[in-house]
Amino acid sequence: MTRRERIGVGGMHCATCSETIADAVEALDGVSEASANYATDDATVEYDPGEVSLSAIYEAIESAGYDPTLERRTIEIVGMHCTNCSETVEDALDSLPGVVRADVNYATDEATVEYNPETFSLDTAYEAIEDSGYEPVRETDGDDSTEDAGESPAERELRKQRRLVIGGGVLTAPFIYLMATMVTPLPRPESLFGVDFGIIEFAIATALMATLGREFLVGAYKATRNRTANMDTLVAVGTSAGYLFSTAVLVFSLPAGLYFEAVAFILWFITVGNWLEARSKAQASDALKELLQMEAEEATVIRDGEEVTVPLSEVEVGDRMKVRPGERIPTDGVVRDGQSAVDESMLTGESVPVEKSPRRRGRRVDGQRERRPHRRGDESRLRYRHPANRPPGEGSPVATARHPASGGHRQRLLRPRGVD
Image (cartoon, rainbow, N blue to C red; front, side):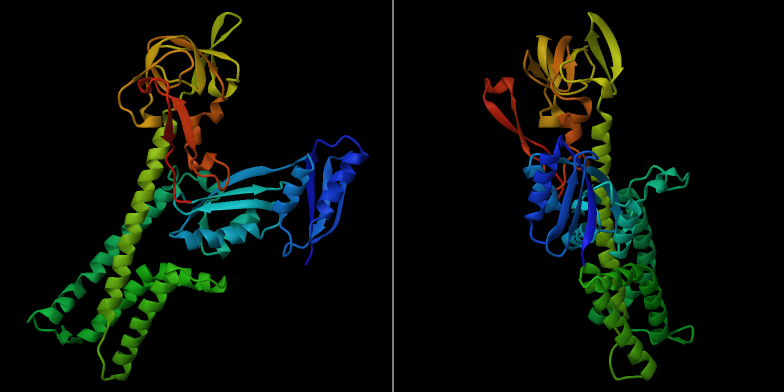
């Protein structure tokens, strides 16, 4: 099955440019036809996605010396618990028309997609994620003035898992006595208020399967439909086997024991694990939010000999900024004049302010100085520490900086990272 892709290309100036791009793309196996038009700055490619990827086509155009149009978007996703989950979503996104590259990180609950804006559809991406068994956070969700407004996906998942743990704990509590009768002289009740205790166990286990077990059963069904298996599959198979076997024993009076209590404890213990995982993610999400909130919103820039306060987004490389005592340093830069002590704990973990002189960097100052930025505000190291602001597939690299306490020797500063 062939797919037709229209790609915007920058840098073409003549017919030779068009021919160069067409030849580079047609040289790829799986490309049946390619053409480029320098007048409209675009290229049209017909290819078999089973033999060649859109990413390879983009690389061929870039290797020829031109710039294919590429945009990037981050989609938040709820419900991922392991690497297999992220791989399932990643495969679903990679198969969509217009997707050049997709990188999914279950630790940050995010998918970063690089795509061709000519053919990519965000609604189609949402549907692909949902068909994979997970819940994308749609952009329109943030416009609703509901209880969830302002909450991150990690916080919503934490609230959901907390309710399941509490409700499941209440339903599982009666089985504690039954488990105790297996290892203690306590008598096992045969009935309660004239109702056979097996019926009561069945009712409680059914309630647990309909609440705690529902998430695992739905996840296992969607995984099976996608021809894969995940943790939900394991839990669903184990608990369903115990539940159905015990139900058959109860209904047909078979000479065997009941395992409703095992089903109950398996579901509840795993739900507790999911709650602990959600709590860790929520705490990490809050920490990242606090980190980004520490970024300055404005900068004092010296232009034409006068001090002007401008939004951080308007600071350009080469501007001269003035940083007063107690202020946050708006963006990365090089000290040109003055000397001060800087709190750079959020970058290095060092709690003691570090003395800074010309050509050294930091985040907060004690003493006035001037500096010239070498990055724009949206490219600072502080903002780059957030996983959503890094390119797909790129972890947290190791940066180097001059540290005054080291006598000018280069030291390695590690940026925190999620699980990739």
